[in-house]
Length: 417
Ligand SMILES: Cc1cc2nc3c(=O)[nH]c(=O)nc-3n(C[C@H](O)[C@H](O)[C@H](O)COP(=O)(O)OP(=O)(O)OC[C@H]3O[C@@H](n4cnc5c(N)ncnc54)[C@H](O)[C@@H]3O)c2cc1C
Image (cartoon, rainbow, N blue to C red; front, side, top):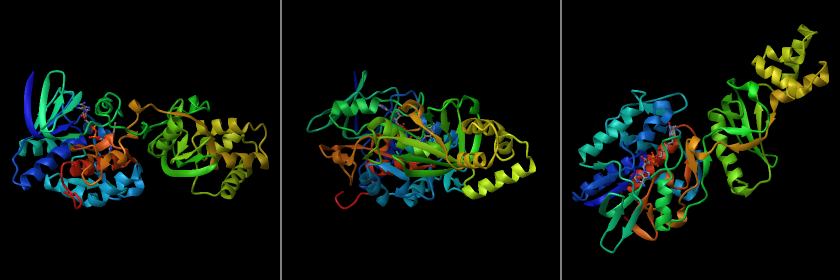
């Protein structure tokens, strides 16, 4: 068995781990310490998930970064972003010479529009600071003695003075692993229940015939009759589920409901999804539009009335739901009602492996928030998705990976550094 010594060992060469390693090297050099920083990665290559982000474009942060776009343990999110927000994340990438561009929604991408630019920049920075990346190294345990920490894998042992655990989550088909949680189990570090976020939501209605339809609208999640969150944008229908970014942004509430029978931490008996297909128009205006079409085409069926306004397959589906044999004023009201609040019953959210993000993780109860070190052992710090913080779609999850990585690496600490 080979034994390697380092000052700081980072477990995981993903977004937060690469950022934590670079930050740790910078922090050490600032203190005149030339100790070795090493990254241990179970895969054959670094940053595989990073390459898949943003459909290969990597939405690396968002100009509108604010705590409102995050969920989970808000003590961690608050503490991290109050010290390391959009300006600090941008500075970090600016300091690496990464050119970016921002779209109308504030989403920041590399100027190249390619995620490999972000990864290669981070790897170049690792090279500059002499950070060694050991691949095919699965950390299975950390042995702790007074003098050092030993990171154990099947073939090698790495000894270090401090360890940063940046193992990420299970999310992402073929990209996530549950290995970080196994390591936490070994160390006796508890974590809150895990569930999927940023994923599609399966519904009980038979929507097979809507497969492939994309419509713009407003989608809302209702819990025990109360509106929890509404999102506007493109809604996609699969053969069994509702999908699209706006649905993704509601999925963590469905995930929480199915995992814990709560929504936003409060117990909940029932959730539903409501879609407004014409949010620009009030119910009365929708009735007037439909009545106008009825006037123009007095013989038209319910589906024909709708098909001049919305996708014809959706029009057929809605007229089936309304079950209208004849079209009269009452039918028009029922059709307008469907256009305003088409109801769906969620039966499950997609499993974590298919989701973009895992909600749940290590909570502030186990952490010194200033350093993101374990309260039980200040030499072990954590960052990234392993922590109980998840964000909306739009560059927020990577923002948390970078920001928590910088803090775990030793930058942007509060008073007690
Ligand atoms: C398809 C997809 C698209 C996404 N797009 C975006 C986007 O555009 N913008 C955005 O903000 N977020 C996006 N996300 C979310 C974002 O990628 C994650 O939140 C982020 O990568 C988390 O960073 P991390 O460092 O915690 O984990 P990861 O990036 O997953 O890195 C963890 C690393 O640790 C390694 N590892 C795990 N266990 C061990 C072990 N025991 N020993 C050694 N190595 C180990 C893993 O192999 C991995 O390389 C996307 C996610 C997916 C799945």
